[in-house]
Image (tube, rainbow, N blue to C red; front, side, top):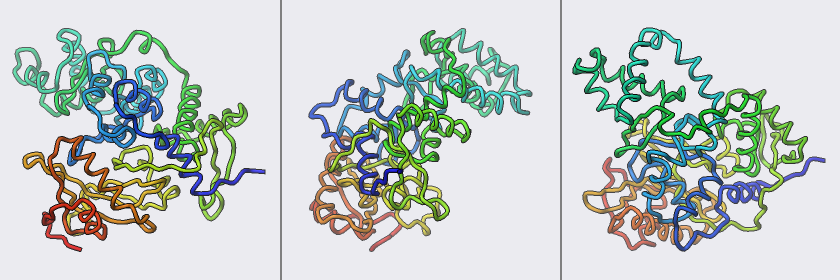
Length: 413
């Protein structure tokens, strides 16, 4: 018989797999950061910087305040241990995992290496390779200057140069050798990655099976859709084949999770044999929209009954919760969402809106207030103010004894 897992147990298993059942370390160094990264396997990158860059936040959620320069050294140095790749979209992955994504780079080369733009711009693509070979790592602005000047390049424009660099990065010809601010520095892959990573090729089926296994470890309990989405693998037959192999090997166990349904029937799910089953998870964390806990919205709804959409592209008058609201984890559940803004000019963390989810515990406001104080210190902000928009705003302002501020759009409860 297939084992049945309650939704509450599934939440705890999933959170434990992501590291939320562990107490935060008293001090955070490279060892703690590396352990958290290897537990997640992947760190999505996003350019929005209203509160903090998205790739910094999953580590803050799991470890608490830490020096982001430690992550920068691991990921944005000349010879990084974690490198940018198209994995779960643009993400940081371990250099050791580069060979597992060889099939992905081949797929992208077939898609973007021979379309109309690429065929018309083969001379530009070769020129870019030659520039990086001759001059080493470069920012796009440095390359664009030469392309426009005519002294080194043949008058290509900014869009062409940037497009060409991005395609070469997708193909794996080029890698990212650090950033200045958020601007990438491009280099030939051979100048960034070790020969062992570049010379190793993992066959497609084997790679997808291994990535499926890693997703299963990172999720604890999951459906096939969950496992495919972790690495954005569109080849569903290959993912299912990987699941069958893992079941046959005894690494995955078929289960039913209460409340998980597809088309009115129990959804097929699998539990990793090594998944922890904590009786209690007592976390408190601010989650980025691109945290693995919530990045697959269907899974977030199944685990937490949490209907989540980012509203940055929604016209302001139609926003329900705010420009960039962050899910808030307390205990083993998502209890609300906060729209945060770091006003660095005034050294203020502004809570632009605050909302409860159904069933938030009585101590949620105090737990959130403590996490906001930690977040403000982490970002070097001196004080916190709370707007009057959202059904949780008064309680959180009270727990913080915080000043109130007017919402930029004039929103009030």
